[in-house]
Image 1 (spheres, rainbow, N blue to C red):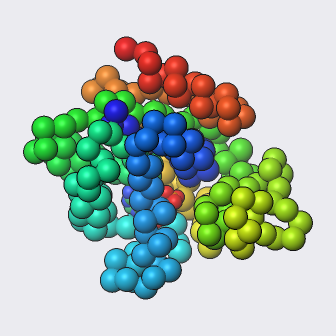
Image 2: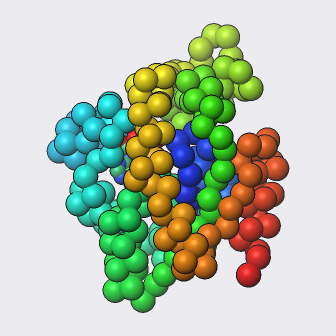
Length: 215
Ligand code: AMP
């Protein structure tokens, strides 16, 4: 299946994407993760993207469309993929549709993750991650070990630069202005499956599987 996980920052797209990818053997393609790796390695892409990311703005469409087009032509995407964090604008969605059409493919379903903004602000500002394996923690619901080392791989636990409250509020505004219109775009294509993402991880995963099985 070719899937898109659509939702505001902090709705759990990454956590759920990793679980489903492992269960199904599809790659989980997070454009945020790809960009953060590029920033850390100081590649040309990373240098161009960094200032947008630090302020919570979107990286320009042309850069993103090229990046994702390149990723989707890799062999591991042949039988399906989960896109997390892309598309984020109507321009990106149209570019993705055109790209897939040229390759005689199309998106099967778009899972819309629904959570209220005030809950997201709390979730994002208390989010912590492992720098090595990417495991998610949360200071309130799933605190990292007291020694500051990841329980899975021993990596360093850190807070993303853009998870401070001012940047989080900006990212949510950007989401409502530029990304939320994609809900209608995919609803009109009859591909949208909305799920309540304000449940525990297992319940959200079950809702996703149920949504994917529906016609
Ligand atoms: P995320 O990890 O998905 O929250 O993405 C972190 C940041 O990377 C965003 O705030 C944007 O600056 C940038 N980014 C990720 N995906 C995209 C995209 N599809 N279009 C534009 N910018 C993106």
